[in-house]
Length: 164
Image 1 (cartoon, rainbow, N blue to C red):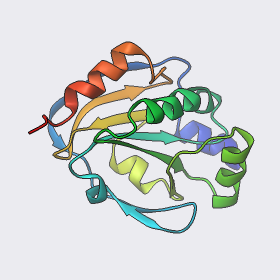
Image 2: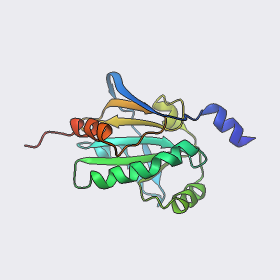
Image 3: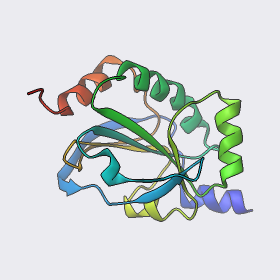
Image 4: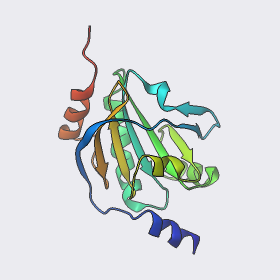
């Protein structure tokens, strides 16, 4: 019953679309703990392009897009880019098992009560946001995407700060 209530509160998207975010909106601040109980805040990522991905281990489209997000992390290695995968309304041990089962090595933050998910006005899983180096939301995506494919990589690169 609890899982059904969570699904009803957070519908799952079968396919994804990315679009420019309307307006000059600063990303809502957050401080969440990772799987090692280390706190991370949005401010920690200032100066980099940040992919914020809201997901859950029970969400099959979320899990389906994770390998592409992990490959994107490798593609963007050594660039001013980072990724945080925010697990919505799940316990730490559930998320840890999912990460091990799917052999994922991403920075996962825990949003146990869904407050950050709601604060970002997300309405389904997975939902992702691209935040520029100044902390402004520039794109949002609903549904699973292949993050390591050309068009999305080009969008991310277009947001990177110019080299001096």
